[in-house]
Image 1 (spheres, rainbow, N blue to C red):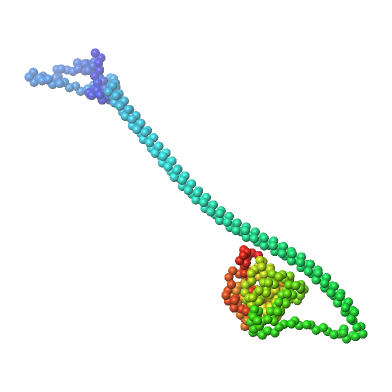
Image 2: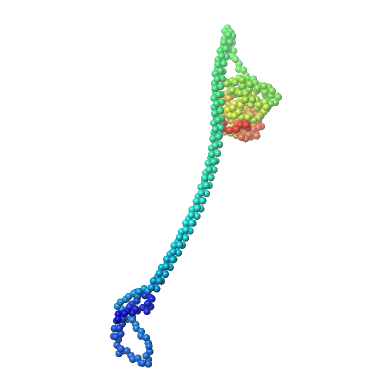
Length: 402
């Protein structure tokens, strides 16, 4: 009999320590025991005591692993199924988390896209607003430049016509001068007495200009009846400027063509406003200078060196135009401009007021002329006996660029 008895009493728990002992080895071991050495056991004391054998000291020849029973396979299969279910649940959870993350990502992208679009729209609106403002400012600048260009063209046409007229007048004047000089020379030669030598030594005395006696402290008011003689003299001077212009006359006399429109403005200022009032602009500073020059010439003819012209303009460029215009119209030089000379130029009304007050204290007669570019007029300027202010034409748009 070659059967084996497993030493593991629990057949379900099998491991590598399970030992199987052959039955032949057990039988040989039992036969070797000496029964003589065993004590006698009384019969009455005999009881069915189970025989307990210890196999710890028995030799082992083979060891075998107990086979796996079908119950363990079912448990393993259940465990594997449980793990598969668990993995499936984890997979479902992961898919759900992925969907949630995708939805959150799409939501964030949507919010960022809306925010970016809002920012871009705001930037576009601000850029369009800035471009509109720049466009408006450029349109205003272009319009101003176009008006200035048109005025410059008009002045060029006027200046060219004036230069042509001036050249023609000069040529005609020179021709008349030559003809008159030759006629005077012939007449003088006919009346010449060669026997009388005293006529060669006689000196011709200069003729003094005729002026009307006016008290030094009198304030002129050309509109009053008491100035009737001055009125007639002013009319005579203006008529001479208009009909018989003298382009080579003495200094402080008008040397330019004086049109009826200019004469009308000057007469209105003298006789209707009494030498103190506003004159509507002629459309350009050159024409205004011509009107102011004619008034300065008339005042100088009446009062001589007592009259002083005080010009007020707010920029050096405009004062330079007044200086050049007065030199051209009145035949004066740069030496006639200065604090103690005939014409004084001012940029601020305060300095002009101080100078005019000193002139009045010195029994002088200041003539205040205010340029059209002055937007506001100091009321203290209106206290002086003679003042002239050029004002823009309300029916025509005015510009301070000319």
